[in-house]
Image (cartoon, rainbow over all chains, first blue to last red; front, side):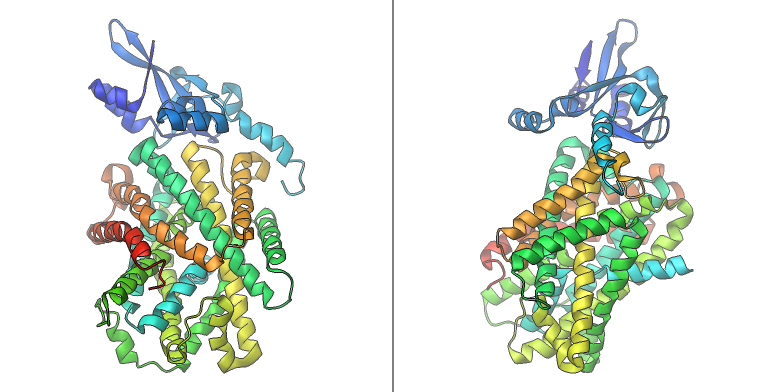
Length: 128
Length: 409
């Protein structure tokens, strides 16, 4: 099983991956209620002996996009934002259009946890 | 119809902020009408890109930073995001400092106390007011600056001379240093009119207001009429600089000094109108820059965003705009001169202008994505012409800043 970033995909010259890069990577993700719940920071690929590489999951969160940064910068970001990463199976994708829409809610898929945690504090403030 | 009318007035009233005020009046005081054509070029530029930003938001429901990440990728997008947030924080700091300077005219509190009060006021305004009211209160309040249009007319400029100055030209100056200063002012004035936060805020606002493809006509009308009227305010400030301040050998650095041009004609009432207009314009710009930074961060990382959601449902977005206000206040509390801060923020803005507007140009022109709403030939030609112009300005900005010692000549 491999995890391939945009540049690696391109360098392997995989035609189908070009569409993944253009239409999936770096696109906004919305859940079943159309709530934004991250961007596609990376894609997990699997080597299938019959069909070649095929995508198996979306990778979302600082842990996923840090791998795309130069290493000194990645270390700083890791210190600031942590390296949490959520893996959403490809089968959870409802459709790919302007956004990548998921079949279930962010909560069910473990996405947007930081928002919910902070939201509990903000909700205590009048008007929050 | 009322919505349209309010949209136009809001676009007009929200056009001016402290950087534009300072650069426009000083441009007039230093070079007479020599930079009026730059105001015209800038106005057309913000109309071209503002219209694209609103159209893309209406058709695809996507604001600018969604597009930036999709189209230029994560790395270049992140560089643009960091630069845009830094410029927004600096601009917000300058606006907060300018609000404190304006308030200081009314009571002799220490400057830093007014800065802290301005921060609290802005946070409360964003926390309490719904998005449309934020747009309307500060946009419509900023319309008080129309008093400068009246002053420009009273100062009786030669209208033929003013009209002729809109034809691009370089006036005859005394020395190379003067030409460099002229170029610096041209780049800064262009940047102050085309500040990228205006496009971020406008397109995010269109998504906040849930525009649909059927709003494309309304978008065009608001942008063209609102921004043309807004740029008239900028032209009026240049004329006031040329007609009122230049003969008196005054190069006004402080908003209060600019307001004296109104006080001379209309006394205390005029002074209050001018200062009131400045307060609403600066506060509106401070809010727009703080929200723009938060919009950019949230859109780039795919967080829930928008004032249409309760704060706790977009908590990271909420923390982001609060953090911008706090950071901007901290910058200005160090005692740095707000006018210097705004000069630097405007010059650095021009450096990121091409990166901010290129993804917009690519998406707005892509028929696969925009269908029948893709750029027509006029938008395409103007868009690319401005992209070349902005790239030249971006390359020239920092060298000119150094060569003119930050615009001091």
